[in-house]
Image (tube, rainbow, N blue to C red; front, side, top):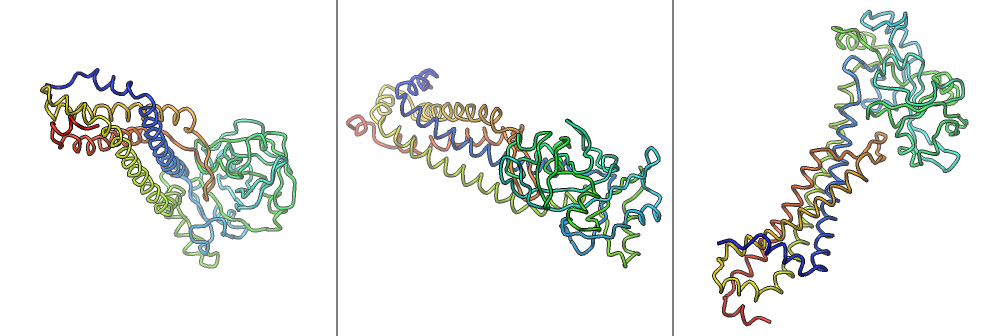
Length: 384
């Protein structure tokens, strides 16, 4: 015969202070799990939505995977369009975007800012970067820039510092913000875009970092790659944009593995904390447990009742943490080396967080309950 369900619920209410402390401890552990898993999911989502299958990046073969260190001749886009016929043409314009891309210190009117990512582009950039959408303001004119919706997070500034009409400074010049753009969560959202000519003048450079080409349907990036290999004098390499960001996924794999290891460590620490608190809770109920055995309840029924209490507390803590994570953490911007991205509390994060919480409730309650049930009923009845 099992103990009534209400018995375990009433036991939690009999010790409100201990119950509240245990609830807060479990909720804190689950919240840490939500933060770490949200970080992992946000990073993976940002890299997975970045890039376009039809876009090929052409940059210096000497820069390896770091486009910021790339330097190619300014005539490279013209050579590519003249030598290859697979590029999309819209409104009489060939969809090739020459770009100068680098990381530099960006300051705002309100603070000292921080390291920002600046991309010098031409009016062909929106034709190639099809995920970029202007959400506020207008395209930058001379001496103006437009900022991604996560640019402030990348620089360590507030959104108010990069509002339209405000000024920012980099490369020894002041730039007025003319617009804001979004890119569906892609890496571009942490960048500052300005006119290519202005950026070349400010940096005293006439070269480019890369050329992005939008290929026609059915055209293969292998044709571009073959051209780069044949023109050894240009020292170019070509890679599909999605493959480039997939390589970044592999580059950040140790970071993701470390984050999962942190989840395991936090969960283990939570289990030990739960064990400690449950041992304290059960130690004060030895006579109660012995009395239940004396009046005929089996040890299995008592064990299930104790586990029920732990699971109820863990479920309440997981629910509390889940609500806080969805309302306060989901969508929070995080700075990272590649730019910035948002914490993503999705179904996978909720499943892992709540699963860890329920696991804490079961594993935290089992050992102390088993220890209490092993004792002699007669001796336990005499316990103080």
